[in-house]
Length: 114
View (tube, rainbow, N blue to C red):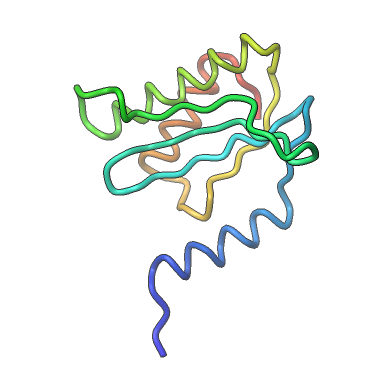
């Protein structure tokens, strides 16, 4: 039986999550991209809580790549407000290209280190 793209992504994500975990000092920056939108959240895996989250659902102008860049900038601003400077990046099983890379690069430019 042939496996689907989503099954491949889920397996990749499992391998990534086996190595990546967030703490309150260094949370996990998890990125998810659907066909329409891009989401990012800072997660403390020890406590099992989301510290900050944002998406491009409220942004109506620009291409998906431009909106993903704004998501990266916004998550970095939310992290600054919570005095978070270091994060571990979780690409969610997606390839590090396109919108996922745009979120990461924009967050780095705004001051997040990972």
